[in-house]
Image 1: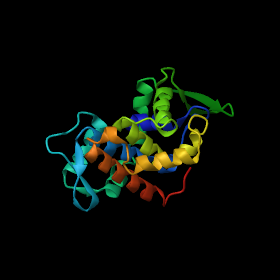
Image 2: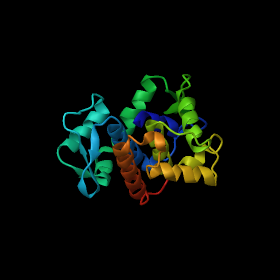
Image 3: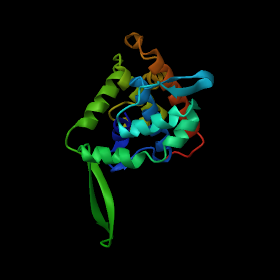
Image 4: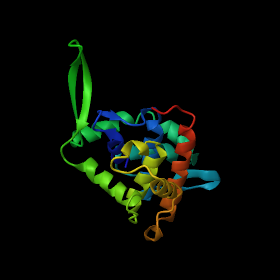
Length: 215
C-alpha cells in the first residue's frame, strides 16, 4: 500500500509528488494500514496498536515497522513519527524498479544535472486512480484495500489536486470522510479490525499533519 499511495500522489504533469511536507505521515499510515490488512497488526487499549504474535510480514518495509511495534504496543502518532521519515526513498525506489515511475536526469541552465521523474508506461497509476474514482465519485462499494487507500489519500489533503479525474465536490468530500471514519460498506463487515486500525491511523495522520504546512 505505501507504493500505491506514493504512486497516486505522484503528479505526472509536473514530475513531483504531492504533499511532500506531510508525506512521511501518510506513507507511515499506509504501512500500518497494510499491516492491518494482512492481519499483522491489531488494536490495543488506549488507542494503541500492537503486532499479532507470529504474524511477521515478509516484506522488508512492513517487517521493519512490525519489528518496531513488536517491542510493545504504541500510540499511532508515535509510530507514524518513528517509521515515516525514512520511507520515501525506498518506496520510490520500488516504483522505479517495477516501471511505475521512470527516473532520468537533465541539465539546468546547461550546467547542473537534476533528477527528473515521469510516469512509467505500464498504466498502473491510471488503474489505481480509476479504482479510487469508482469509490469516491461513482459510489462503488470498495474492496478493503481500495477503501484504505482512498481514506489515506483523503487524509493527505491532496484530493483537490485530482479534480480532473475526481471532481472536488460535496458528494466526494462526504464519501472520503466516511472512508476516513471506517465506514466502508456492508461488504467490509468482516474487516472490523482493519477498519478500526485504518480509521485510527488516518485520524492520527490528519492530527499530526495538521501542525505542518502543506506543500
